[in-house]
Length: 285
Image (cartoon, rainbow, N blue to C red; front, side, top):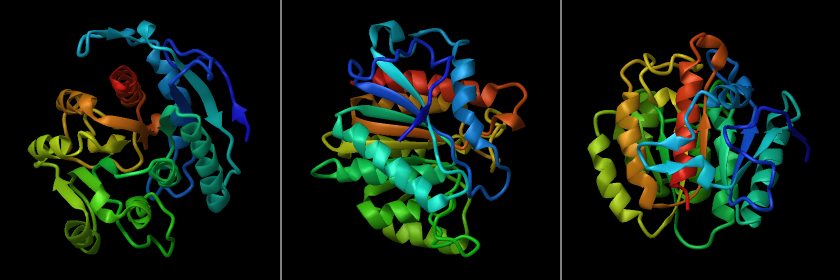
């Protein structure tokens, strides 16, 4: 596998893979986006705007200077070939987990989460769970005749890890059929049910957890730069409160997806994503 390594790296990142527990990697794929494409440009933009952030987090009283983490650049993918791209992403993620790294992946569309989560699940023994933050359930059986789509990603994930291992938060959009399926088979919490996350965290404290964060979980006022904006989302300030509640979980990996920078001339969507990445780095053990 080859990588497009370039500077700038993410704020305070190094190139020392061997010395780093936490690694960042861009997965610039947006082949199945159903409305506005462009999320393949997000990893570069998130890195670019990260220099505006302070390396110090007032939320956690920690600094990125106290962490050794590397930025691997972007994974090179066979443009337009969905199946080969999924396999390439899967093999890459397997190598990271085999090397005992804790990866943070920068998407890219949400379909990239399927091979990433599959690799995480296959590399770990015991119970494994996914916390899915999104405006959309992504639980369709197929979308426009395709099984592999950003609209079907959590359906594919559930087929691999079991639907009861998925917890969806922030959901406020979906077809009647997929919402009914998600209610019956997984753990679905609509956007007004954020309080339930406290109980979920309590139940998952000794379990392996992967986070998948779709930027459209936020209200478009805070994150307009995404391919499928959905009104009525969470405030960015409230999400950081929720994110920090997860710090006691055994988080083995995370992704942040669906940032589409060309639809946000202000860069506030990419900056929000970069700030989430900073907090994730500082949260991870």
